[in-house]
Length: 202
Image (cartoon, rainbow, N blue to C red; front, top):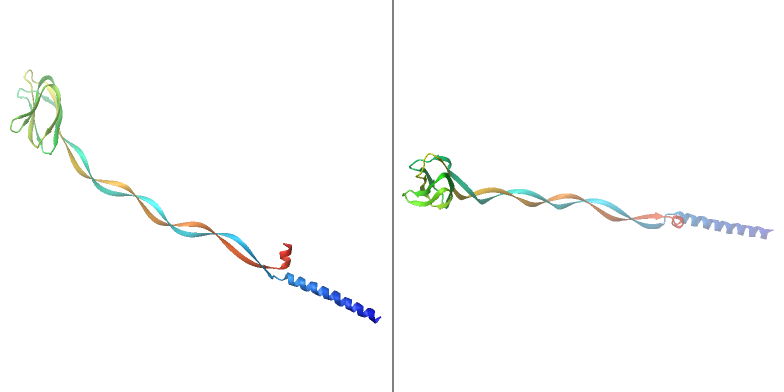
């Protein structure tokens, strides 16, 4: 009888040891002993300075050549026996005398110097005038000997060129630093502790 009791006690101890071992293993496996690493991508923003182009209008001064005109005569004049006399003065260098005349009856049209010398003359009832003249005093004369009292159209003017200072504007490209929000990404490594049970069953 005693033998059977000893055997039963040994068996109980053996089973209790096995159960204790399983409980111990279960407790150990439940502890967060395992370290695992996980990677995540994180988006973040930084402020960077970048160059931005912009345009401005800047003034500058330049010289331009302009053609100018001074009109001495422009209209109808009555023809008289002594002729139509139009005095004028050329006071610009490199000037040009331009004009024309029209009359119903042919006559002579002349440009005369202050010394009473005929510098240029044309005959007829009409003509255009384009004559370079040096500086000085002159007179234009239209005369005809057939009939008087009619209207003669005369246009006379001095043309010359003159350099003038002119302010103009040009577009200039400039650059400035401006803050810009830039999207970036980085990898975040996170370490967590888990139990062996979680690793096995997940």
